Image 1 (cartoon, helix red, strand yellow):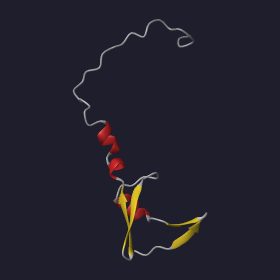
Image 2: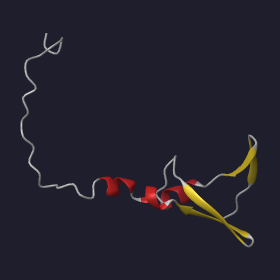
Image 3: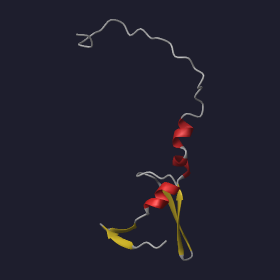
Length: 80
C-alpha cells in the first residue's frame, strides 16, 4: 500500500487508510510508539492504551447484585 508524506503545519504527516484503521481497530486519539529501523519507520500501538477498557474493568464482578438506594426527599425541582 502506497501513501504520501504531506506538509502538516510545521511537521509532516502520512494518512493511514481507513481499511488499516478498521483492520487494527484503531481510534481517533490512538497513541503509538514510533521507531526508525534502518530504512523503515515502525508504528506500534502504545501498549497501555491497547486494552484500556479491559484493564479498567478487569476486577469487575459481573455477578454483583445492585440494591436500591434511598437518596432522601427531593431537595429542588426534581419533582414538580
